[in-house]
Length: 555
Image 1: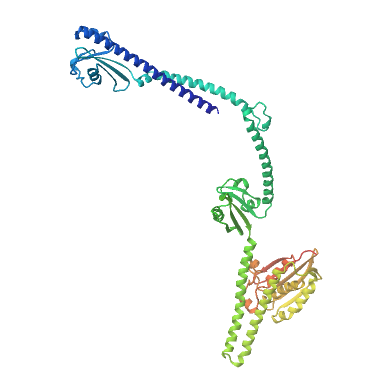
Image 2 (image 1 turned 90 degrees about the vertical axis):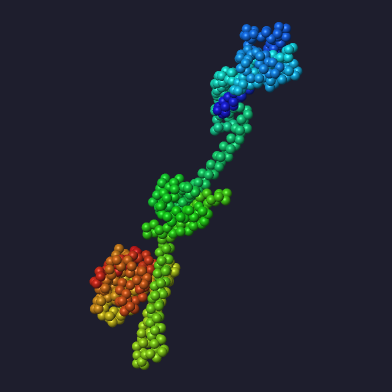
């Protein structure tokens, strides 16, 4: 306001001084010029009368020296006969001069001519003498611009003085005007008793807006608290950005990317993570497209769901949701591998059966060899049946986990049944199969527990050495049942220990074909253990044997 008052005052002062100066200069010029014209005309009249009475001899240099005017005597043909300031014989003919022609025609003539610099103006007045000659008197005065320029210094000095005075005045006036305004209590707008009456409507509006802003701040605070309560307790990561920087990042996203809020908020998205996938998801969202990508960090997989945020139809930012889909990805991978393995495992016996049957169909087998081929078909069909049954068992364990009926079951009875069932198979292979245990009641699914013990012992027999042994043990440790199966078989390499429970994984592929294994036995054992919250441990030495222990929770 101070600048505006000073500027307006200074402009007003300058304009006033300039206009006044120009007006006064014009008035002064008119008066001076009119006075000069009158003096020239009077002098010319005097000289005419004197010459008409005394003759041209009256004009002498002495007479001309008494006048400030320029006196010229011109003959009827325009020849200069006398000149008070220059030699007459050096001057040009004046026959074309306006004032001379008018004097010859009407008896008197006048003209005004400006100098080449336009700073002076000369007035010429001529009268015709009785002898026909023309007497001319001229005088020079400053023209309008010369008059203005002559007083310009005074005008500039006056402007500077008045502008300084206006600055001092404007400052004092502004201070007086601004003092009540500067002392306003905007926290309590309606309590300013000394304020100008003119700003009362403004104070009333400020008071209403202040109350409205206070209500909005309370609402915003509540919304902020709700937003923080929701986002900070989310399991999934959440990142909110505008077009250039991160606006918010919740705790889950901070833990996931290993950053802090201070490192990311109001900074570029690369401060969260430099992975190109995250950057591409954000760029697609800011371009107006919904984006869905998979981001891999270490051994874990995260799904990025990026959506644009529109305000008034303009894209102002993006929201990125980060979901941990590692288990889903692994399950999908296992499903694909399982499907591929099932196809492969089913294909092998089916092709064998189809091949043998086709040979018999086309009569390419001798009559005495048909029982042999039929036996092979039967063996492959049995293998196919076992494979399908194992797949069904695994599917049931996958789909019915947590819904299968439980009952109190004695593990000792299950171990004894398995021992009786596999005794003959062990003897056929020359394997010594022994069991030692005690009564161990457990709350579980009896059929699943039976399949678990059966598969452990069956594997130990199938993958054993000739004249080897299988030792089944059941005991209690601190009230918890512990089941252990030890054999003297081919053993497992250390790098394969974690993989033996994968579906269709075989340590010795060639031996598995000989024994008819499906590669699903230990997968069933693993699922059965998980169903009963049991922990499996494996201790194996290649070529020396394997010991698998299952430790159930305390009853």
